[in-house]
Length: 221
Image (cartoon, rainbow, N blue to C red):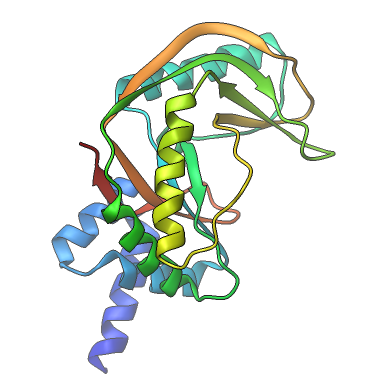
């Protein structure tokens, strides 16, 4: 069997059985010494369309708090719909999409942009839950707050994305999605949830799968 084909089959088996999470993918990269861009090429060729984006992820403690809150609010509001798994909770900073380029080119340019960002760690605070009215049959139920510093951080990142030749998305409403619900809910105050942002990540999310793969990450400061 050709070496390249052996690697493809081995990676395929490992991805299907072990790399179901960001942590799994990172372990595989470390253990096999393969770059995440190679794994992305394999994964995308096997799984279909993907969504690439920069994001903030809550620390474990705050992620558990958000997950528990989602359960309570879903019960209180009697919402049905697809929930966001605890390990996939995040606040999107900017989508890394560009129809002019291949996914591999987008990742390379996004990584170049990410590594040039210089920004001090900052706090984010989420103070209410509400629905977005963007789909006729399902409504994102999200956490929101006064996130001016996050918006400023996004401007810095988008400037580097433009410098790398990536399309820069214009509109932005910072939030953390809890679930895709069957109906709308008006703004609802919550006990504030905050954390210190010390890093950000580049994420690959396969459409139709509840999985986020971390392709790269960068520390602030």
